[in-house]
Amino acid sequence: ERCYRRARHIVTATDGIRNRLLERGIAPAKVTTIPNGANTELYTPRPFNPVLRAQFGIDEGQFVVLYTGLHGLAHGLETALEAADRLRDDPKIVFFFVGDGPQKPALQTLASELALPNVRFHAAVPEAELPHILALGHLGLDTRRRLEISRGTLPVKMFSYMACGLPILLAIEGEAATLIEKSEAGLVVPPESPDDLAAAIRRLRADPTLCTQMGARGRAYVTAHYARQTQAARLEKLLRKTVDE
Image (cartoon, rainbow, N blue to C red; front, top):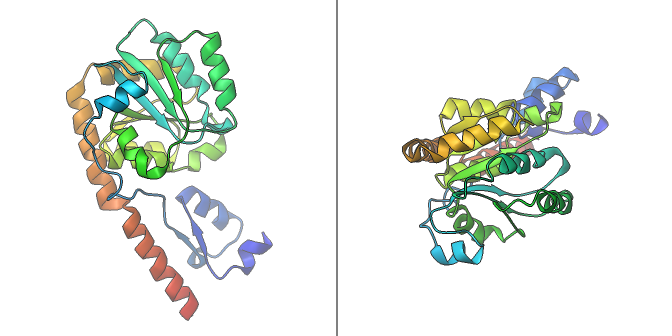
């Protein structure tokens, strides 16, 4: 609290965080929201790489449900594994988890206990390589546990997926869900509901035209509203103004 009040200016990543600070008595003029975004020059739609597909154990023609990033406690990726369990009889659907985090060993153990044939794990990769990994996906997945803190998140991975032209599937409530619904760039299902998650994956797999349309809308939306380059320029302008005051 003391740090907030002594700060010359405060930058928040979401409106939810900003609103909580205002509720604590911080002056509105002192708080600016500059949300997460994506480097739309790095994250672009890339051609599918069959060598990478084979390297990661993904069969030709499989529909890849891709998750990249932190495997954390709040992400609730157990729900994704439970959805994979419900989809185990469809050999054309595979879940590909790329990244690391404190929950990853437990997730790998759960996948082993469930004997899931449709789940692949891979370690985190340098950011420069990530767009090539994203090109293997047919949809970008993000999940959260049903926690109040999750409602105020705008995940970076969501913007990276969108910038690469992937349709989005969110099991998240709050600001991220509102953005996806507004941009028409994907589907939103309730958190911690593997049945709803599995049903959404089936729907997207069955409609490649819808996936293409959602991916194109997501790329256009991020380019127009959440390009990292634009956000950096806004932050630079704010910093210069604050220093000059």
